[in-house]
Length: 181
Image (tube, rainbow, N blue to C red; front, top):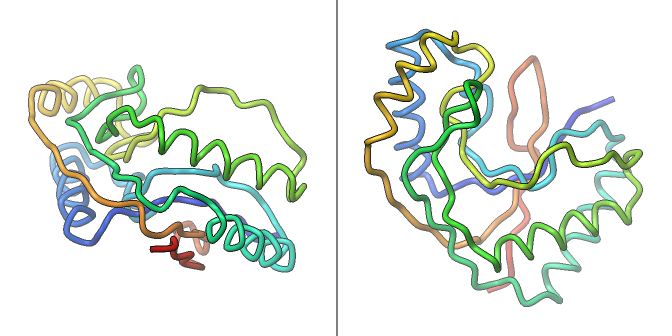
């Protein structure tokens, strides 16, 4: 069964900057796992789903977006942060409107009964990963020393949501859902 997730992808100019951070990690530490997907903020984590159910969800999502008041959300990227010694990422500034949007999309997803619902393991922390999984602990500490003092700030408007699909070990864009203007 195909595997998907729902995400927000920054504009190309910002994505290219984030890819440069990922390439820097690769050059210094050999870690490439974060590059298996375009730079993104996960809204719905990976799930297995038949194409027909996914298509129904996308139709419902488009209807929800057309009738919602979530069309003017700005996402601010604010420096770097980490999850313990596992993940290095570009941090997303706290944004109540974006958090409400994500909760509403998750509720819609849950109502579609695409997957057996599971208890969320972690509180939702929007971020864009630059290193995870394949970076060694000693390298992670060194990478964190490099990035923790570095300044990085960008912002962009929430204008599309993307469905990404896993094929041959890499996540690629399957669908783009435009937000109403």
